[in-house]
Image (cartoon, rainbow, N blue to C red):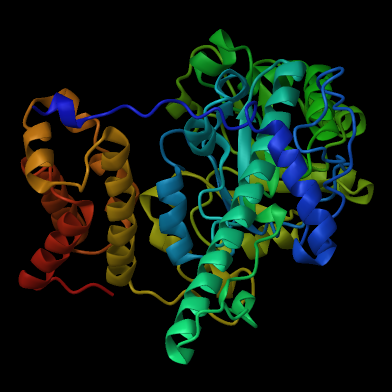
Length: 494
């Protein structure tokens, strides 16, 4: 029976059950290999008391460093958007631009603190999914309790370090396997029974990634979301702008335990607190008491009552001059501003940087037309080359990625192969079963890659039809079928 072949993996208690072993492992590796063997990991074996949890030693004995100024080039970034800036979207964007700063969806701090023992959920919530290619990337958090957000950052840091430790262990295991293979080959070639030591097997292994590869480059506090679920029921988001002292308390608590800078995303005003003096006081208090040096300012005010989130993105007028005034007032204080709101062209970056902003953040246009960024690396960041893929090549590459994620999802659900017939039977049981497969979610970011071309509408129609009619088929096969269909109908794509 189908049910007999499915299994539900038990939660993996990644931190609490391995704390002592991880600490000992890192200490041993530090003594035997030295600091140069682990770039970015110097000082990680020092034992300190964790200020966030009295009497509790940090899981890996990390000597926490004070917050540092962000090394991220913020000239161009994509705004955090719920249900849009997922890890799948970020993978797609890295096929188009390597330098643009990407953000996660907003993550409520309580989600991390309540699920910190489950490695799978932690990886989904705060993991850098592709450490070698996903940077620069910023984690956005939401919440109003300083202690909760402090613990959230603390747990996330523990997890990042645990991931780095697992990465080093995997490299060691790989090196040992290579040594064994070399020894076996040498024995076969020489005909000797004695084991001959391998001379340079380490050269076959990739260099270990630094600890920072598993960390986000910055942590951002959401003080600009006007959604009723956030600003009213949750009492955070844009509502926090009414309490700058509270925001300062939160960011100070987060910075105290963070290895990366903490920034704030806000509006130019909220409800009746919409004068420039109110905005200036907010920046002054959060920067002075909370230690924040980078603010992303959406140049519209937020109405918490009377306007929907969509209306709050269009009805309040854009007030770019207020952001420029902030640049003039705080420019000598080491405080930096990224401007957000209404931007749809890369040419805006040069104009806004000339006025003193460190960069421009683009929101909805980045999702509805991701191809906008295909020249961003050269035009904005001055890189010698862009990734250079065509739209079709981007979609085929993304199809390969989607297939990998799809297979992982099936494996986690208990499918052994995946077996095509078993998947077909599973998806035929009803909508509930089809929705457990991530096919439609995986295609969401890719549907707009052809925006602005004659083929865009046809491509979306074919993909949606295939997902509906053949839910058991791999996203890679769906993608290839849709692209082949475009070629068959003679669509020309630049």
